[in-house]
Structure formats: C-alpha cells, structure tokens
Amino acid sequence: MKYDVIIIGAGPGGIFSAYELTKKNQDLKVAVFEAGNTLNKRKCPIDGEKIKNCINCKTCSIMSGFGGAGAFSDGKYNITNDFGGSLHEYIGKKRALELMKYVDDINMENGGNNTRLYTTTGSKFKKICMQNDLHLLEASVRHLGTDVNYVVLENLYNELKEKVTFYFNQPVLEIEVLEDGYRIICEKEEYDSQYCIISVGRVGSKWMEEVCQKLDIPTKNNRVDIGVRVEIPAEVFSHITDELYESKILYRTEKYGDLIRTFCMNPKGVVVNENTNGIITVNGHSYKDEGKQTGNTNFALLVTKRFSEPFKDSNGYGESIARLSNMLGGGVLVQRFGDLIRGRRSTESRMKESFVTPTLNATPGDLSLVLPKRILDGIIEMIYALDKIAPGMANDDTLLYGVEVKFYNLEVSVDANLQSKYQNLYIIGDGSGITHSLSHASASGVHVARVILEDFKR
Ligand SMILES: Cc1cc2nc3c(=O)[nH]c(=O)nc-3n(C[C@H](O)[C@H](O)[C@H](O)COP(=O)(O)OP(=O)(O)OC[C@H]3O[C@@H](n4cnc5c(N)ncnc54)[C@H](O)[C@@H]3O)c2cc1C
Image (cartoon, rainbow, N blue to C red; front, top):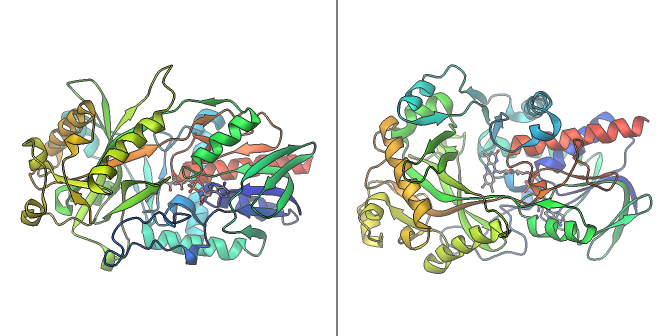
C-alpha cells in the first residue's frame, strides 16, 4: 500500500497535519496510523465503583486514540510563546502565534464558537502578583472545556474520515528508510509513503527514542517537571479564574532560588489519574457544562528539574518518584496541607473531617515520603506566597495530590521545517520534545503540512 503522506499518531499534531494537507490538496493520499481507538470507543474502565484504580489496559484510553492525550482534556488552547513549548525557536514567534490563531479559528468553525477567549493583557492581577513576589505570564487562553473539546474532535473526525485513511489500533512498530520514502511496519502489514510525519506524543516517548537510536537521529536531553496537584474550594481562586480562567504564575523560592509555577488550572473541575507507560500520576480537567462542574478548583504546582552530564535520564528520575507514590498508595496519594506541615500523614479519618471533598479517589498518605525535600520545601513556600493573593490557599484542608509529573520527550534534532536529518521525515508535537501543549502541537502539525504542500507544488 503506497501513500503520499503517512502520519503516525492521531493527537492534535497528527490531526492538524491531516486537516491542512487534505484541505489544501484533495488529491493527496494521506493515511493516519493510531495505536489507540476511535474517539467514540475511547473509554477508561475506572468507574469509581467496580474499578477504582488503573488496570493498565493495552492502550490507555485517556492518552491514546483519536484526539491523543488531549481528547478528554480541559481543552485549554493557550495562544502564547511564553509557555507550552519552544516551537517559536524553530519557526519564529510571529509564525508560531499565527498558526496557533489559525488552529483556534478551525476549532471555532468546528463547534467551539460559543467558548470564551480569556487574556492576561491589561489584567489587574499582574500588579497584584508582582506586589507579592509572584509573576503572571502573558497569554490568551481559549477554554473549550472537556465537553466542547470532544464535540470539536468529533466534527474534525467526521470531516477527515472522508478524505484520510485511518488505521486505528495499529501501533507502528518500525520505520524503514527507503530510497524514495519510508516503510511503516505494523504487526501484520507494511505501508510505504513518500513523506512521513511522526506525531506520537508523550505516550510514544519510549518508541520515539528507539526510532531515533535506530535511525541515528540526534536527540538532546530534556527536563522533567515534578510537583503536586492542589485542590481547593473554587471560591478561593474564583476572583482570578473568573477573569483569567488559566493563569500561569511563577515564583522563585527564597530557600533555593528554584522556579515553581502554577500549571493547568481547572476551575470547578476534577482531579484525574494519568497513566504514562504504566505509572500512575495525577492531572485535572474541567467541564464547560455547569451540570458537570464541582465546587473545587485544581491546578498543579511544578518544579522543573534539568540535569547536566553525565546524567541523561530526566524522565527516569521523574518515573522513580512517581513509582514511589504508586508503591505507597497503589496509585496517587492525597494529603491535607495541614497534615503535611505538621509532619504527619493524612488518614481516612482525617480526610473525612476535611472541609474540602476530594474529587479523585486517591489514597491518603504522606507526600514527604515521596517528594525530594527541595521540591517539597519549594511547593510549601509557593503555597504560602499564593495565600497572599488568594487567602485560603494555605488552609489546613487544601488538598495536595502526588505526584504530578510532566514527562518531556527527548528533544529530537530537526530543522526549521521540523524535518529530521532524513529528507521528508518530520517529527512534530510533544513526541519531538519541542511542544508540550494542545496549541503548540496543533500548530506544529499545520506548519509541516504547509511545508509538504509547498514541496508538492514544485
Ligand atoms: C489529562 C490531560 C489534560 C491535558 N490538558 C491540556 C490542556 O488543557 N491544554 C493543553 O495545552 N494541553 C493539555 N494536555 C497536554 C496535551 O494533551 C498534549 O500536549 C497534546 O495532546 C500533544 O499533542 P500530540 O499530537 O503531540 O500528542 P498526543 O496528543 O499525545 O497524541 C499522540 C498519539 O500518537 C499515538 N501513538 C503513539 N505511539 C504510536 C505508534 N507507535 N504508532 C501509532 N500511534 C502512536 C498515541 O496513541 C496518541 O494518540 C493535557 C494532557 C492530559 C493527559
């Protein structure tokens, strides 16, 4: 079977590559290979009753399938070069922003039109943050919400399936370089193409590493972010989330000078499990539909760890810490802030007395047995700093779930077209280590599609 373009991975990167290619050139034969399921068949078996914890399915429905890791996410598209990836370092700041806005327009045309675009520009919170040694980053945020995000994906799929050949439950095992293109090797069949776009996301990080080793594509060591997910009554942060929805706030700790940041804010949302290569960490999302909203807001507090030579395995370091929490709690641990600062573990009975009701069924425990002291000290410092702009943040009943880990793929060596050292082999999205967000991953997909379309014209 021969295609013009084969795309590996149907996350935002792959979807927007396919979208742009087939919208601008209907003659192209495009195939998308996806390890997971179609959108409607993606279902995590955890129901909170019969199945309470992750049972390590063959492919994780939260992370894999049409829509990728973002399918059940909060659908927050951050239009900014300040965070979410370093795409602008490759394609330029102006182009990166233009592409993010282009993606936003497509999302609006496909069901997102009644959603709100929040912005930090001109916000009074910038000053309030600065007065309290906190720093608010510049961004516009489109909040689709989990439900609208799903509708947008459904609409995009309905449009794409008419023009693109999708192979679901088809993990690509290997890529072979041919004289005039690439051979994609799956369990039972092989497929050839002139162009190949790899967009395998975080869940494909190990596979990506193997491909780079085999094809001798240089990679750079990357970072890992480690921390906790905080859950508080929504009122504590509502003055900020009502105006900005998502705020990225930075704090430099007094003790170590480390930078800590808020990440992935979910007003009236829920805390969820995340499974990366069998390791259970924590994440969060929220719904636009008021009927599904909760009384709590959650967000992550993360510390970035970068390692210097000879240590190369930053993800391994993060995994080991996450494994410790899995070992002690059988999954994610939860602790009241009051228990943490008093040096005692949270127990079922202490949790029952708490005024904040957890939205995730996690095991009460002691995060100080899991997180390195430096990271935990930094998180505690930042909670007290945030308490100055959002009183109630440092209450005893503030819940901390651990651990939250943001694994970053090795940064793959690509040029300004996101092309690897092999002609017509492109590596995009989170799988390239260059992007870490829906907007940047999607924009990288449009970018390579346009590069390929130009090439076809010649
Ligand atoms: C719970 C959760 C909430 C999030 N919330 C947000 C948010 O609100 N805003 C935001 O900006 N970001 C959010 N993110 C991050 C965001 O989802 C990712 O940055 C984004 O999905 C990356 O897109 P991608 O296309 O690069 O990769 P992915 O979305 O990870 O997609 C990669 C796809 O490739 C497939 N694949 C992997 N290996 C293979 C293989 N060998 N063969 C075939 N297919 C393969 C995978 O199954 C997957 O479907 C969230 C992530 C999670 C998990």
